[in-house]
Image (cartoon, rainbow, N blue to C red; front, top):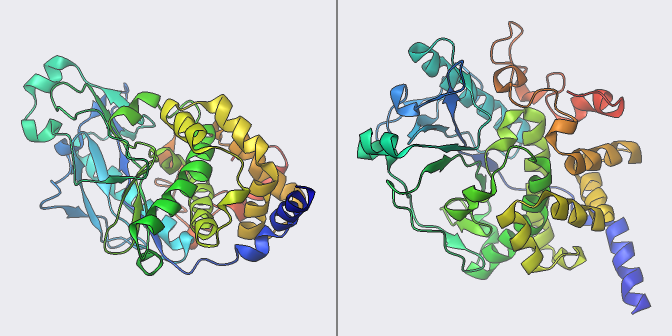
Length: 363
């Protein structure tokens, strides 16, 4: 009906008023591969402690002192959950730098890998300690009742890295349906946006075993969203964009605004599971005005800046990040000037990147 369409348009135009604020902390426990100068993966169990007796990220770094350990071939570290995303980014920097400090004790020429999936040989699987190739972790839930393929350690030849987001929203989840409602919004908006954003870095096959669309847990602090890969860790600007959008998805669910998003559940599931970039961008284009309304609620900036943020998601990280694979330099790990706390260094967050982004430069 015309009246309903007009009401919807008005609601989207004033979306920033309905999505103001957050009121909850976010954290993460990302995984990342380390490789040698030739691009071969250095197993994290060569230089980190097991999860049962973990090491710690450096307490001398901002929001450091959190567990750091190997998870199979990948390194994993925990971060400080914060209401301020800039501080969570600081803690992520501390985890990245601490992993590198330990890895360099084993191989001084190592680097952080931009591979989100690696393939192992049958010979490698047979020769490794069973503890090092073990698959499977604590049970998770799925918003659609989907189930991954069986995780048989010696028969699954791929390993992948996750970039899970933790939300401190236990007070907002009164029933299982509350969690499912939030997860479905995160899938439809955030996960689909990340299919576009992570073009050339995500791999569809990962979804068969790990990071199914709709996958989540209910830890004591609230909700763990387990769908995304770790590709947002390639640059602090990416982390800012992804986590900012994630927090607004929670509010969209809570305020019953999801009906404004134009995509079917079947479409969302298919796009994320197949990592279908072209269809993801079609959905983002279809919902351009709502996305711009969400970005306006986050950043409170004028239209040209909102358009540029939208273009970043549409074009993928290669369109605005100069070298996504140079994770160490992207996070200022080795620069003498060092990391600027509160994630306020040049081109380290949306605000400080905007001059270059508007000029068409890569950060």
